[in-house]
Length: 403
Image (tube, rainbow, N blue to C red):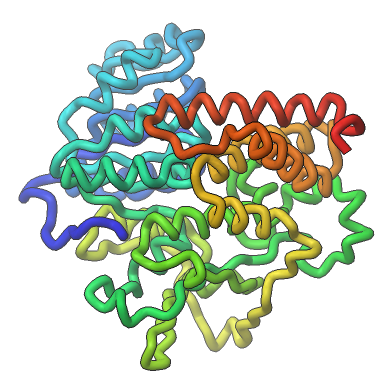
């Protein structure tokens, strides 16, 4: 469960550092920060390689420092920021330095395993971590939550479903909760017969019906793996057992999360599918702030529908639940295998239904080799991540020999 955050941070503007500034989460966040310059001071912005986008954002938000992970575009960034008073830097040492700068709130939105080390480093006493990087909890959930607890930091979930549950999860009534329910849109192939899914193209899979997201998470939504990852994350965020976590397909993406209590109450958080709402909740918690999102008009919407997930057509969800129950390194290997398989699909090297086949084959092979033991540190997680990626690449290269 996210740590208590009963009081506001300080009396002045909240000092914010953003890891993953130019991604979809970072851009939504930047919109809110730009609209509220008196409420927030931007300390550091970190991005991967998008020098132009990072420079433009840093200037708009008046950041103190802008850092690129990749060093090759450093000069472009430095040139763009010349004369602005904003410091430009690049490389892993510069990211570490930026993370160590005084900040009240760090938004962890670096995509992939690359976000593990800097987000772990950002956990410091008294800080709030607004977490949007799923790998921190999927791959290293026990380590991450333990670090938050030891540092007496505060963890707030940015993901729309987890944030929704956080809003209706009465932590002082945790023993009265029967079930935590994450909703899923069902993606673009919710009603497709499995035979038709054999010929799904990347272009079709990238057309999500409700959300505008990065390519990997969009494909993960189409396979429902993303919902499986979210169940794993929820197991670390909320004090419930694995069998108390459930998934409900809800095509309208209006109800983002529900909590069922023992008295029969079912509490839900509803809203338009706009990431600025959960981001704003984390920025201003425990209070709320105005957000220029489309207001939900239930009368106009008319109908909300729900259905159970189809595990036959979407086996990735079941693979994620199996990894959660297996524990140890299984979730980390699941994530790594999925990322490689998704990229192979996007590159036209494997088919859509090969994604779960690759993941299952890799997990079986790693399990048979006794490589899915619990990790003792972030380096262990990264080692397993690397091994699972290599095994998945091998499957992609010569999958017939694995069958």
